[in-house]
Length: 222
Image (cartoon, rainbow, N blue to C red; front, side):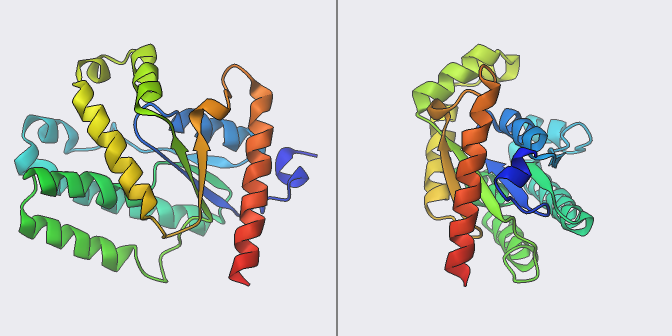
């Protein structure tokens, strides 16, 4: 009996992993997918035609970039549910509007008109009963000190060159966003409570928590 059957997690479940840079979203996505025998859904960065332009000129390309992300994530969400579920998803469609587009607007790198157009499009596409929301969003959280340490340890050049203030702001924005998020049920996991790289068996207690949480949310719906 595999862990999905052991803990009675429906085979058509869609679980999304969210959290700021450095919390281990990709690691958690792969670990849960392997343990539950689910498929994975990762963000496609390599084929993004706006990314290089955006980094060269935030003000000119932020709206284009966000519209591209919205369209791609919407298509991916549709594909997942048409497939019949059974997916672990790295990063949610909700973070784009709740964190990144909002940040560009507040910092002046997206005009008020563009931001209003973007958010109204997002609401029309996503915040409706017709959009297939995930069964569960797992929010990976940790202190800014722990996250900075992880970013330093993995040593990606672009991340190392990014000012600490940026990561601090992003951490705060994520915390504010998740506190007001209600599009689907949220399970918070602290990154200090497990180590799925060093201890493979530590994924089972997480799956047990997921199972218990999903059963509780189903009871509340009835």
